[in-house]
Length: 303
Image 1: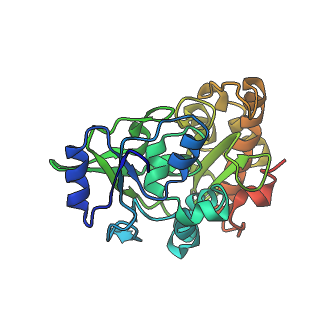
Image 2 (image 1 turned 135 degrees about the vertical axis):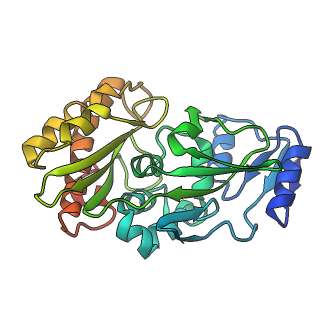
């Protein structure tokens, strides 16, 4: 990088020290968001880059006390292929499987995706419905924040200067749960969601909905939950009519804008359709039906 500084620490502590030493330094791992944003003129390349792609022990995917523990450097491809994720946290596999192109999924990391704070990011809505927490580390220690509290708006997070995302902890869903992430897109690769929705549905022994969470992508400044849809599902039998009624009220959380990918009116109309598809797949998976990953390709999330 001409005129700038490229630093490649060998340890997490060294990376944190470099962030503290170089005001305004930016972390880079896969670089998929940083490089594209810079080439398109949406952002200025920072004077100092701290490359963390070689840091040890930050790319793991495993269980910790029953929860899913994912390191910040885990790639979307690794998450999508993980049998652990596919089995219990299926919506996250749905989302990871459709991030960008295969090349992007092989180098793009979960930590980078979260730090980019795009309201159209794929993995965010699944992490919200699962109640995930993000670990932030600084030279002064670490803290955990709910994933939805990490985002302050498009491209902005609540992380303090010098803090680094080191991992994500995702609680295990209750027994009898199923989940799904579905998006509307125009192409099958190199695309981000026009709108998207994640759903987590837990069924009681009698087949009624014991609990539900619904989160929406690309219809607000950050990824948001729909309290109205969740309330509508609670206690219902997940018939087509009940799911449609729940999807019809997701507008309580949606305030979509118009941009090059779709008008606000179009997004408002389509979020109901996509939410219905996500809830339907989640309920069917909760009932034991095997629906392939990614759900988007199975239920017509593409146009």
